[in-house]
Image 1 (cartoon, rainbow, N blue to C red):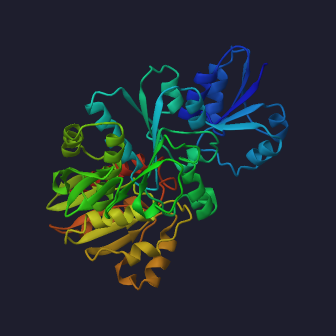
Image 2: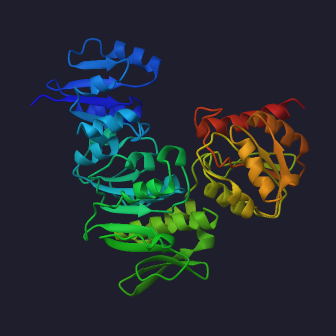
Image 3: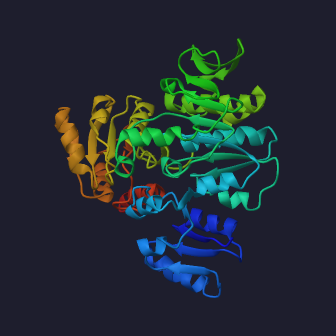
Length: 447
């Protein structure tokens, strides 16, 4: 029976969904709020008799739709989605669409922080062991894109965001990892309860022959699957730290994987990411030597506590990917090396509060430069914590850097770890990180 299918949001995931589903029997409707993209799509699909590009999406249009494929950027709280649910129109995320069309194994990783690092570690460990593996999901390659041309016996290592999990119903990976949960994206999810429930969807449909890998702080979460825990305390199944050594435990047997000093990644948060990845690798039967080869040589992704510049004995660190409070606290802890530090905070408001940053403020933080849409909110939190003497306010990142570069001395460092999204001033976190470096270079080129 012919269906009317709406692809809502036509960037990477929307296009991948369309390419996977397209056939000449069904009717396809494409909609994106971006007017320039609408013009591009009208030109691209002008000769397709069963593809229609919508300029607006009304309830009347939805009445003629059988199925909606949602991009992660579309909130389930959108009034048109609420209407579609009342009309019992089938709603599916791109992630779930890919899952429904693959026969291959999926390893899915979610959490507030550390997702990209962890999926990259898992991918490298499996690849190093000779497995056929693809890195997909929130890291930048839609699952549907790979499923379209997939080979059998491939393992998909999938970074999964809370946005992607909002609309899933049947998604069921073989291994699901939940790294951590702290307040994030509350502007989208409305409250912490909704955010947590979305994260739990990653393992909601899993059975007793599947595997869940959980941070020990989340062990109260009920699962139906075999559960491996990771953290600083001893575990019967999973990974834990013992006198700076990472131990993997299973069926009463304990194996020393490596010493923390042998890992290229630094900081407890990264050690937790490593332990999660080790759990997955051991479930997949990867030998210790292959795991250790990766751990010794692995480098973090760009814009994640990355040293990007050094001049006159001053070091500059880009943590633009630190878009929530806990990520910034991790960055501060990683750089709590005794060097006087200027911290740049702020960006677009996601509904988070900043008091926790001041409660955990590293002693080497000398100045906090508040920028962007959230600067007033940061200043208020700082005043509540009696840190007013450390606080400075700037309209934009460039202004804050002009000041900092003029004040910093040899042996000191600057950390950009905004605890906010970038969309008030930049295209995305990567654009913010690149502009951060560009502004610094431009400042010193004047002299």
